[in-house]
Image (cartoon, rainbow, N blue to C red; front, side, top):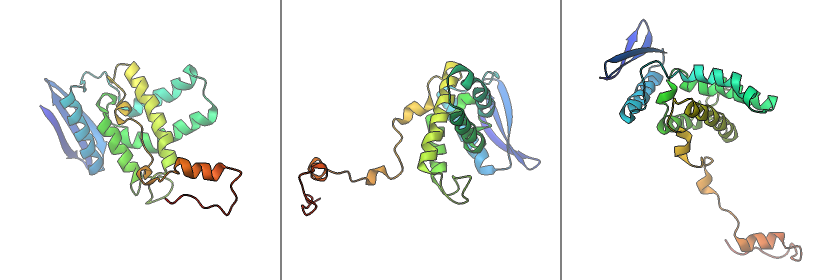
Length: 199
């Protein structure tokens, strides 16, 4: 019982053996990605969230179907749907694509965020992280897809809910104005020669 990783003909495969049921999934040639898929599947097995009955589609299949259905269910602007499609194509699909939707956890999403904030996270600019605005927009897309997975009974809860408010990278270094400083700035009676309170 468990998850094993093997290489065959230059490609990595993940094999899952759980309660007498076996599944095999081809991951590709990237060993690091295959190791991450194995870890995510092991976490899902430990939580009891993984089904091996074929009920849970891969993320890529589920996201592709969501992109077709979502604009038919909700009034969505065309440019918003273009943004959803672009993020699925360039970021979500390549990262989550082969994972069963049921195996995606808060940890899986955290690992995605970490990967996107590191060098190489951007697909447009080689060696650079994905911009914070693009990441936040893309996580909104991921949240919608995973919420649909909850409604389809592939997930018990949306993994993004476990993250709380996702802060911008570097938010902890923000030094906001105090009330006295804001009053000094906004008060029209104060001339430019007035100094702000010391910080």
